[in-house]
Image (tube, rainbow, N blue to C red; front, side, top):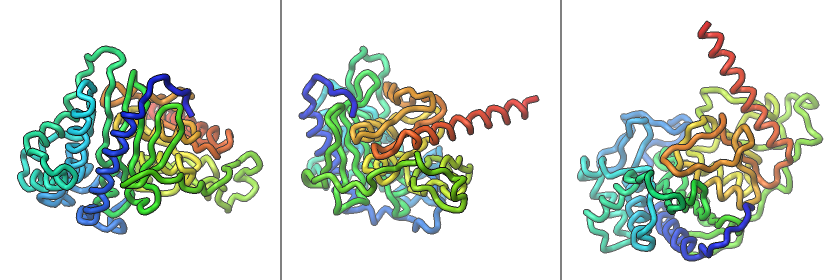
Length: 364
């Protein structure tokens, strides 16, 4: 885990956990009604077709990712709670209320969902709370606290009956110091994990604290294994990749050890690494959305795992809506031997060099 911080953040943790518990309860109640296509009919990846939109329930954004009434309900609920509890803090969320104002049916459904957890939620207050997500000012003084929310990371997972996650983090000076992730698909097992920097990982369900789930592997060790010894056999290392499989994949553990498919979003992959279901995870791309990663990074770190970029730098700089890393994010579980991190890193660097070489050749 990261070095502990001096200040007492038990109040912040308590508010964040209760907020994500409320969001998780909403998901457990209505997620089934948000499914618009069975997983078998939709390829893995974040995007959907524009025809997937369902009036009054879902819209497809300009980047071809879906957003549902449940996304808006969760953002409005949590933003309003944080403004009440910590009025001096900033707030960053993925969504705004533009689509709600343009679609009365969608607004009505989102507000009705929010009222399941806050009966007296006023429509104007609700819309203003949702809009707070994109009103972040980057001119605040250093040290200003910022709550970062992804109301549903992997919304495609929600609308196709796969996994998805809720992520909330408190960020100071670009670094997450409190983090809570909800993974409703894990219910009735512990479906919420929470961390304070330097204090380890703890677990909850939608109502209260839970014991940590058993870790399924004692070690992910490649020190005595090479793909040359058994080219047809899979490696002993389950690993994950975040980018469309159609774009291909590096094979750091041999040709028979392709990445496992886990849809949708980055946070469910951070979850898998944090609980030891997966040995590692590569997030390709060097410019990323803050809300997709802030909560997951701290949870993996506090589980005893490691998160860094291809140059070995820690992943932070969560001040703005996007942040940069060197080439990719690479994270590994606490059970992974150093060779797992090394192979994942080498695979990322090798692909980056190959792409650079191909780009140079094509410009000649």
